[in-house]
Length: 318
Image 1 (cartoon, rainbow, N blue to C red):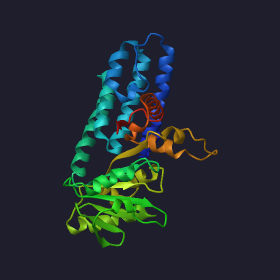
Image 2 (spheres, one colour):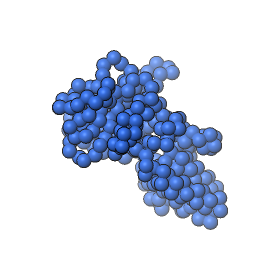
Image 3 (cartoon, rainbow, N blue to C red):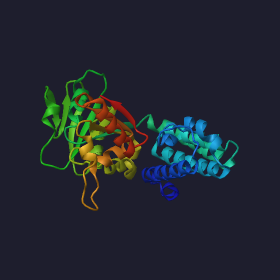
Image 4 (cartoon, helix red, strand yellow):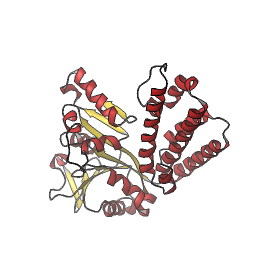
């Protein structure tokens, strides 16, 4: 995680530090038999509450190590632009070591980064990545955005590699074709297809909107035909033009409550990642959809399975 911070690989660094904190928590729990009740990974989900419960059980050495991990995670999150969460983590570090000069410097740096990002991001277009398996409900969600009178000008990009163009289900109302693969909906939103080079597609979209004095309120990228959201997320840290004009706002994964477990538990050949696991692992928000199709006991099993993959993402049931 430290190496990733030095190389500005913030996304990789957050994954590494999360794994380190999880391993540390397991070791801490095994070493103490009289700990107050808590959920696994509350140490990251709700650090202030966790520390209120556990601070009296921490040795000085444990205190120091945990403070350093919280501070490192805060710096990585600040690099990603997750300022609110970075403030929470550096606050947790200073709860453990309020007079530590090095941690106070990290706090100043995180706050300065936040001011810098806030000023820079006011002129940037926020981008959300939506991913999820076929049938999870992504098209229904995107259809709602494209057709509702919400007063926002939102561009929805289908990032795909196949021969089929924009999903017909997204275009089941009157619309105007403004140029090849770019379709303007009645409510002012835009739907377009990008094949292959996402960076080139984003630049083209920017020229057609902000470049003509018609800035977007936000962009949504649906990873159709590209199950793993990580390569799309990396786009926003790999190209200077994209960094200067757009900011990654979050990754939303739509999960089908009825079929989720079979996807998560599917055994893949050695060296092949489970796409369903990757989608949930990278999400910061999860839409647990079709909950009406399963009974409460099964739904809780699905929830536990999701939490086993991603301990910190916000989950909304629909």
